[in-house]
Length: 406
Image (cartoon, rainbow, N blue to C red; front, top):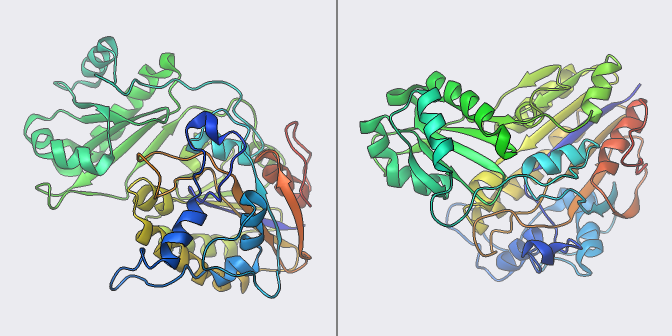
């Protein structure tokens, strides 16, 4: 049998989703705009990086070709490689959101065909009856925030008052999400997680996709720092995913990072937590060493989105891409005949775009392994084809929403 390794570069879009205009994202292009800034010297940062965007390994796997398929042009300052070693293309999303669960579930073969619930951007984000229920059932004296906000900004704004009052900081975004920030020492991590479980139940009636625990430490706005103990409380996917089908077939599914949370731990047989892209890469390599025949290793690299996309940090995003790219030879050396690696993304988060939210974009799909021959599959009309490619490669039955790209 074979093994499969599915790596999601969270938010690494490559532009031009066919329905981008409907989401207010016509013209967004995460890779293209980062490359444009780098080529112009606008992403140089002393001690971090400088010059054109340099991704030689992903380029050799077909990234430049995939970007050209998606947008009709090459990213600025980046040339086509002399030879491509992978199977490459782009994929468009059919799910009705541009959020993390929708993207990941569709990657796993299950598109989201319903509409999520969202909280309003103007005025109080959360209805009074929900706030009252949270305070009563969560045993808190009130909440702070109650608005759309950037997580780091709202912690800086309300962190000290939160520590004095014991009121959790509650906020949302344009995604279907309820986020709760609390101090790990003064409020307590376990208390925060218990509160999130309560809120998860309370927001079910509002059709909210995720409740996210955002623990932090520090003593003042200058030292407040979010920790690696984030926890996502997601609803279950609407139907079985390729993870469930693998588990039912007796296979091992290694979930690295926040993958377990995204799938509400359904279809996951082994869970590994890590904080930061490089730690996630190390954990993935360890899982690859342990993975038996027929196994899937599924990793989300969250830093691209959380630290750089949402914060509109072009230089940081570029440096993170270059650091990830430099690790790919470490991965390649551990592959065995029959192994397949897929690099892809769940949505875009163009750091040059207006606002701080995700962007509706096509994503790259780069596949490689010792026995795979290079070619293009063009543009897939659903992320679900990625999950069906994994299913076909690992020899389990096909699902109803896609087809194998190999």
